Amino acid sequence: MTEENKTKNMRSNGGTGDPITRRYGKLGRKIVLGLAVLAIVLMASVSLSMGNMMKKELLENYSVFTHSYCWVISDLVSGERVMDYLESGETDVYYENVQTYMDTVLRESGMTYFYVIVPYDDYYVYIWDAESGDNQPSRLGQKEAYTEGFKEYIDGLRSRSPENYQEEFFDDPTDGLGTAMVPVYDSNGTPVAYVGADIFMEGTRYVFIYYMGTILMNIVLIFALFIVIYYFIIQKQLIAPIHKLSEATARFKESLDVEGEPFHADIHTGDEIEELGDSFEKMDRDLREYITKVKSITADRERISAELGVSETIQSNMLPQDFPAFPEKREFDLYASMTPAKEVGGDFYDYFLIDDDHLGLVIADVSDKGVPAALFMAVSKTLIKNQLMMGDRPDEALGHVNDELCQSKNNEMFVTVWAGILTLSTGEIVYANAGHENPVIGRREQGFAMVESKHGPPLGIFEDLTFETERRQLSPGDMLFLYTDGLPEATNIYQEMLGLDRMLNTLNAHQGATPEELLKKVKLAADHFAEGREPFDDLTMLALSYAGPAGQAQN
Image (cartoon, rainbow, N blue to C red; front, side, top):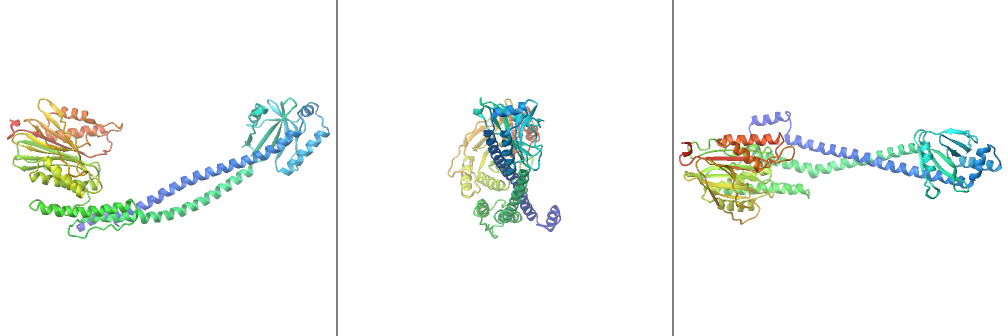
């Protein structure tokens, strides 16, 4: 790397520091931030859940406590006497004994109010009201208006029969009181009055707040300790190994010298990160072996660059981009394009003259995306071209390349390939298909139509495969159109795919266009269909128009 490039890298990353180190630091902060958000959500959920459980338990305890005293008075009081006291307004010894007992219970139990009432539609009337040192009791026959919610509570109790009576505790939020009431029955089993007990609930709220605060404080401390410990574990088990792999990637970008020191992962996390490091180490070893083998077999050909960097420039340099491809050849016109879904894609195409009368054509799609797919693409493309240039038929070339990929592949990738040889003097095209899309041929008089092909398996999965050869005849004025699945599977915002029918309609709408014009029109139609949605797959196309020997179709 030149000093100028180093300076540019420094400026692009804020003027200081290694970009890998900067990304490494950001990853650690993201993990801590994610854990903190998770901790807050869990703390809130756990605290509210436990607080509500405690509040419910306290209310149940208050209910049992107050209802037990109410039932004692209900059993003590005579329903007939209640109505006599209410009608006469006069008391007797029995009345005073009940009053004394209720006063004693109120003082010793800690309840706030203890009373017996007769409810009516718009008000209720006191029969007994226990007296303590802090409150003035209501007198016999005194009327009181219902407070908010209390009438509905009384009406609910009055609607219940003795056989189906269920206790209900009324928590009044307006004055902080909790109320329990039970009926007083006459000799006919009719409820004529109700014994009520009120207890001040403010203590419950204080206990709830204190309990919630204690829970939150303990949870905060536990989660803080957990985040610190977990961060250091992640730092050692995840971030540091990723940093090491990033440094190795940067080293690949600088230089890949077969004679240099091999990459050694030295990662011992016992999980997928260690497997990734081992795969990276194996990729380094396999690439070195492959480069050595290619150098020994094709010494008279262009040497494969020793700087297979993990960058976008690898793929752009590997794909032929000189158009017109062979200006001296009047028998055909050819144009190809590749638009990656990511910075580096897995699709590739190739075209080359095997001799003066035979043109090799290749289009392929690697199963993965990104840098690993680009490296796998570079290997596959070179192997296929070498086999065709050495005289193999397309089916033979695919068989040989498949065996090579199975022996040296990594990351379980595979590649679908369409490879063909066009005889320029006759228009005959011989091809083989390894799991790739069917080709399309456009006839001058009939338009574009799909050509059903015999598909073999993709390359790089199983060894010792054989592939079938097919032949098609191109006439002057015909056009061959090749593509990857990124075209028919282009998807819009409604999850609809472009599909083969729309693709063929687009091709037929521009019949007669040059290969370059046709590919640009198809790409424009695919982009318009996707409505600006980011593509999820690479889009690669190749079009060849056949003019016949010495360009007959141009005459």
